[in-house]
Image 1: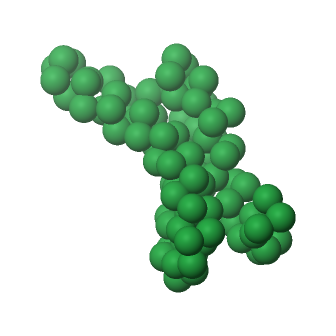
Image 2 (image 1 turned 90 degrees about the vertical axis):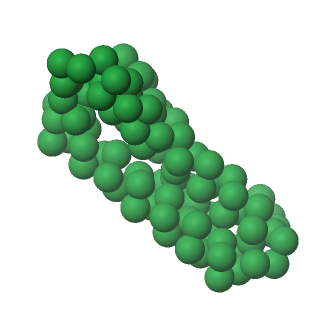
Length: 96
């Protein structure tokens, strides 16, 4: 972690929060409701799982891009991860 400046690590750290919240998305919360059709339930389940997987992927991808020298791309990826993390937290707070 010594390879990264503090501001990049501060941007990347919140992207790990959905790993802790994944238990709620896996077992407890259905933030989009439960439709009666099985196919729609499956699609909403996949979207719900992407809500916690994408920020974690953004964490690793952003730090990797920064390490390889693509600073602007890394900032964009980490910002996307932050937006997904904020949406995860809002969905959990508003649903529970």
